[in-house]
Amino acid sequence: MAKDAPPRWDRRMQQRLARGEAAALGELYDRFASLVHSLAHRVLDDEEAADRVTREVFAHVWENPESYEPKQGSMRSWIAALAHRQAVQRLRKEGAAALAEGGEGSAEELERKVREASAAARADYIVTSMPAPLRAALELAYFQRRDYRQTAADLGVTEDEARRRLRLGLQLLSSANDQKRNGGSSPWRHGYGRAT
Image 1 (cartoon, rainbow, N blue to C red):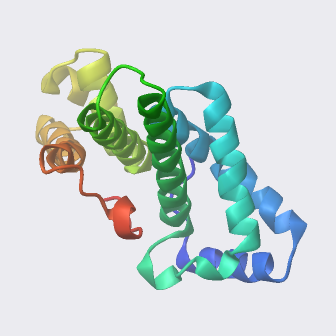
Image 2 (cartoon, rainbow, N blue to C red):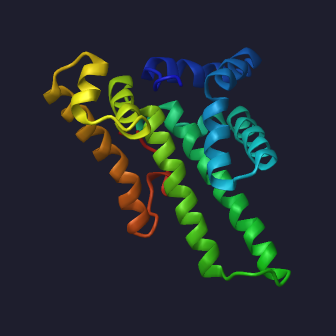
């Protein structure tokens, strides 16, 4: 997964999109389509719906490049926010339609599902956006069940450094869980910002 692009790249990309350079859209798509699709899929749990959201997000970017504000964060964060917002809107719309047709569930259950999907998508975004050393430490510790000593040995770092990486990675991930516990408030809800 590509790291957040430098601000200069973001501004140049916005200018190219504003000029209508189709090659710029292709470059942006190549760089961020997998991010958009994975976030949408995480919220919707539907491959076809995630494909539609991906197309809708890049259509919006193409038609509205001026809506990106470099001072508010990276283009990557802006695109992630668009993907999240579009996926949540689709989830709410489909859930509301199912409720209107007399389907099982309630509006409260739908909102709970939206909050849980949003927190999961945010956690995925945080993990894919964190620096590689933190991500590698978390993957060793949690997916391969290594303790901090084994993680340090596998990474070729000191035990203190392994503990520091794990602690920082967990702190970053806790922001997604904190938002879930606090009613799902997210920087994606009212704009966008850098996931740190």
